[in-house]
Amino acid sequence: VGSGLDPLEYEVFGLDFALRHTITTAAVNQLLRALRGEPLGAHGQVLEPPAPLLAGRLWQAAMSESGAQYVARQGAGLILARTASENGRRTDENQLPVAQAYLAAWQASAPPRIAVSRTVVTAKDKRTALASMEVGVARFLPQMIERGVLPAGLSLDDYCRQLHFAYGHPDEVIEFLAGDRVLPYATDLILQVNPATPPLEEALRILEEITVQIAPAFGWRPALSSLQESL
Image (cartoon, rainbow, N blue to C red; front, side, top):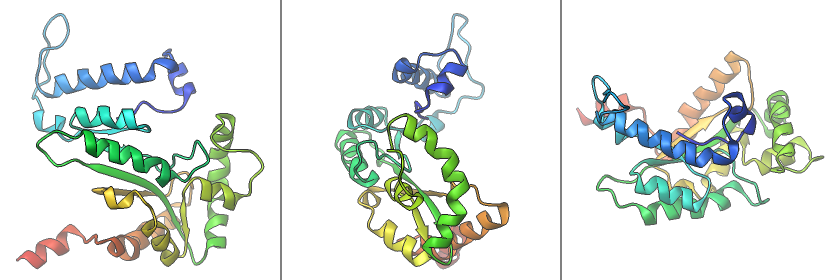
């Protein structure tokens, strides 16, 4: 769950973008009540069947320290976006105090959860990876420039570096992710090709390289392998 960053999305539904945090908070509270089986509305309607365990597996996105503290007080997992470079600093530099604020505010009995999202595009080298990303990233950039998140006139390589994308040979991607300051705090790592838009065959190749080469470099193993070793 997240408030979103695009004013046009709120405009479509006739909602005030300036009130997005208030709207999201009210909606999440109502969702949690429904999952717990509490009565809703004037007629006391309840969710059938209730799903109280699902309420404890909720994830919420936050971009600020105060937002992360709110997520912690809700007992929800924290999602950190693939890019957060509004002030010209690296995404992981901006997100590090957010992750730390979440952990400091955590009081639930269950362990805290932090999911870190990152864009990954693998190829034989950086130049090839950049060429494959050009169309998708070019479609994504105008709204970022219009919102003042990014300056105009940079090269594609500069934009991708500012957006904290990991791209190039799998070894280069591993090296980039290993230097990410937030990853040591992550319980979950979400790797995606978006905003790149590779053809299906290319996307499947990237996913395979993530599975076979990149994820194992950070200790991930397929669940089946773990099960087999325990037998």
